[in-house]
Amino acid sequence: MIVVPVKEGENIERALKKFKRKFERTGVVKELRARQQFDKPSVLKRLARERAAYVQQLRSQED
Image (tube, rainbow, N blue to C red; front, side, top):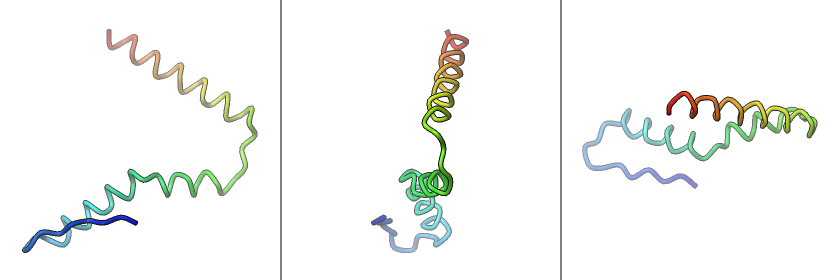
């Protein structure tokens, strides 16, 4: 359960923005979208390899 403390006199839009940020960090929506369709394990491995290669490339460019 997500709890967002709201200070006295705080704007409701600001509190809603805090809630949205916390909710997004939990990864619920991402997990729901992933569960909507089945991906073969080989496809998941391939995507993970591609993602790792991309991150490695970014880090090598950073140096």
